[in-house]
Image (cartoon, rainbow, N blue to C red; front, top):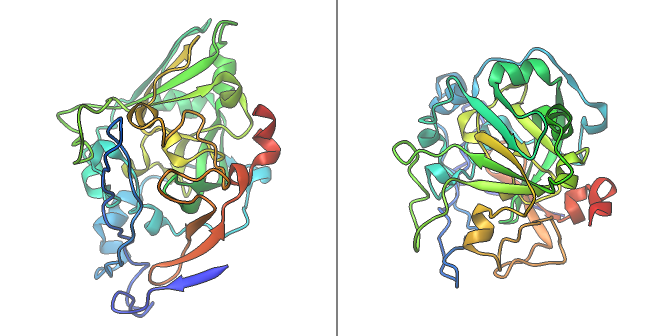
Amino acid sequence: MTLIRIIKPWQIKVNQITPPQVYFNRRRFLRNAVGAGIIAACAPLNACKQSLSESPLENTLNLPKINSFKTNPAFAQVDRPITEATLAGQYNNFYEFGGGKNIWPKAQSLPTENWRVEVTGLVNHPQTYDLDDIKRKFPLEERVYRFRCVEAWSMALPWVGFPMSALIKAVEPTSQAKFVRFTSFYDPKITTGPGFHLGKLPWPYQEGLTIAEMANELAFLAVGIYGRDLPKQHGAPIRMVIPWKYGFKGAKSIVKIEFLESQPATYWNTLGPNEYDFEANVNPDKPHPRWSQATEKFIGSGPGLTWEIRETLPYNGYGEYVASLY
């Protein structure tokens, strides 16, 4: 394991600042036959010159605490430290608000008041939930999961939410339901798009799972992180967390969940099926067409931009839970 640390000119004394801003170069949208693709690139950190309590970033993270949840002992820790909240809070993919990582300021325009999630399709009990309904009807728990991006970087994050199997039980899918489609919020007057394109993009952002994947013990719907309500840059107020798959499978800011008979079209699979397949399980032996997946850059904590080069684990280390699905 190789430890890489950037010290100058971006790292300053720990007692002067909180963990500095993680900032990487914007991903470039590369051409392919379908017209999509991304490439991971890193750039140095900019040092934060304000105290954490004065930071605009911190204001986006200092949300109400979620009081009524339990820690699931089966997922209380992983084989690496939890990523610092301020690092995770400023290094995000959220294509509705831009194509780079530093989208957290633009994401604050996301309207989360009076949020509704419609659950429909091939179910016996279709429902429309507001956020209070969700928090009241589904027992919340905290789970620490590894997070692995298709761009070969990773984090470890403490999500608060509930297993997707609880939602399945509530709505009772019919025997015809084989797949599930998750649709994210999209309003072209509010969202700004990724800032690059080679044609029409398939908005709104949609993702999908098989019923068996959704029913798996790991599949999770998060309404919080770090014990607080979910910040907008993380996909407030509710998002998918599928830890054995690449991060793009985790649709953010969900407004609709549909149970279907046939496999749905999804955002990145529509744009680049040769690069982003529907299944998208983490696999170190299956390289992306333009980079290896054998290793990953784990973004952890500490002063300055510190990351570790780690070996990628099959199914992101969750093979005992999900390998039998495939």
